[in-house]
Length: 246
Image 1 (cartoon, rainbow, N blue to C red):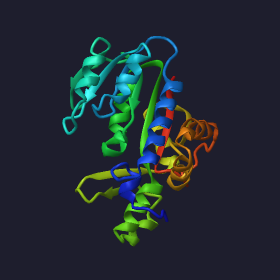
Image 2 (image 1 turned 60 degrees about the horizontal axis):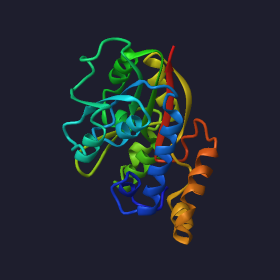
Image 3 (image 1 turned 90 degrees about the vertical axis):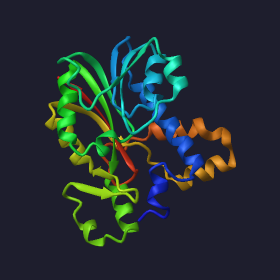
Image 4 (image 1 turned 135 degrees about the horizontal axis):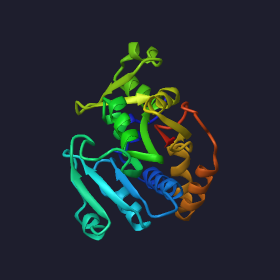
């Protein structure tokens, strides 16, 4: 099992160098994934402005659905106001069918949204033919680490079923195997293009390398993105997938 607390692995702890690396990997993955032509992008990632801002600066127009539980960075909103439209909504009923070119579902939003099947069906509905979705979810690795910390040993044998994991703050996260994530996307009518752990380099490795030379960040990011651990859910706390609407 993982040698550091699960809450650290989910971004709420103090592993500063690792999370600097993680954010750099995520940003580069998004840069490579975004459409090459100016497009309309729907951002469901929780209203923090990071993903919508990056897409807007790349020349896209973004509809960002705000999460009532999170705050929005005022500077991000002001800077990207001409290209980002903010909407408060509980679902996507405000959008017509086939109205967006791409959907961002970062920040583990499909793990926080326990009715993920319904949400993904709505994502497929609003995508235009040929449109794509980028989805990040909590992995079984993270779920098992949390359950082990809570000494919920009986649940560790149920990895073939839907894994709902309670956090100390009372929230629930849904953890996916690669097969379950594929079923979620295919079940919504999308074709999976690729799937991989967000990172395969361990926090200890990243901390060691960056502790020796802070300038090694770009090298670590390139090393990470040149790895090809497709569908491998035995490493990494989050899974990332790209899917296309036929």
